[in-house]
Amino acid sequence: MSNPNIKIDENTKTPIGSHKAIKGQSPFQLAFTRFRKNKGALIGLIILTLITLISIAAPILIQVDPSATDLYNTSAEPSSEKWLGTNDAGQDVFARLIYGGRISLLIGFATMMLTVLIGGTLGALAGYFGKWVDMVIMRLTDVLLTLPTLLMVLFLVALLERTNEWILIIALGCTAWASTARIIRSEFLSLREREFVLGAKAIGANDFYIIARHMIPNVLAPLIVAATLLVANMILVESALSFLGMGVPPTTPTWGNMLNEALNMRVIEEQPWLWVPPGIMVVLTVLCINFIGDGLRDAFDTKSTRR
Image (cartoon, rainbow, N blue to C red):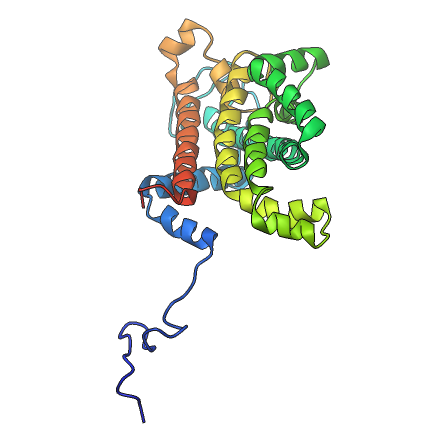
């Protein structure tokens, strides 16, 4: 017989107040729930996912070699066969646009991972150990923050006298980690005085176990937000370097290299199909990443009023 004093939730069909009626959520589940309510971030995520998938599937979708030249069909206007026409070398602009996304996104995401690895490691060491370790790392960070990233990358590229996407990724990753290190250091300075860290030290846990098990999981939220915005910045830097002729070699299609083809007024005025599409792709990709970053920041910020 059922107890008439127990009320049943009509939606869950479970007793009100029982452990089944209330389902606990982790901080990441709560953040995901808040992120889904941000329409701008969701739209940005969908568009960025489509751009990424199309770029990855370029060899399947486009049966044209983006580096192949056709000297009999140079500077052709857009047509049913060449959707975005051809450039001065007779290369298919649409094929270069699709393939260009692969290199631009590769540089953005790979540089972000390298930057997070270097900056996160140094920031964690500085924030946890403090003293002379903190002093040395932070003075190096201060030096890097006073120098423009673009200028340092130009210096490294000129020093190597050659460049490709991997050299560019290493150069960017080794010069852009300072801001990430600062973020992680400030989080670690706060976390190392918390009760669970002090308790782990009291029972004899070693430093690296405490960092990996107790502290890193608690800095993932700000780290994810910073990493997301880093991708957008690195795509812009790659485009700027390629536009200046110091990025990926012109033979490799990237959005920055395509913009580099618009260095003269004739192209700007008479051949907008050469520079408008890659410009739109750079702006659209960066906007999507920034919307996602804003959405993640609001989702992980428990004090935010935007839900």
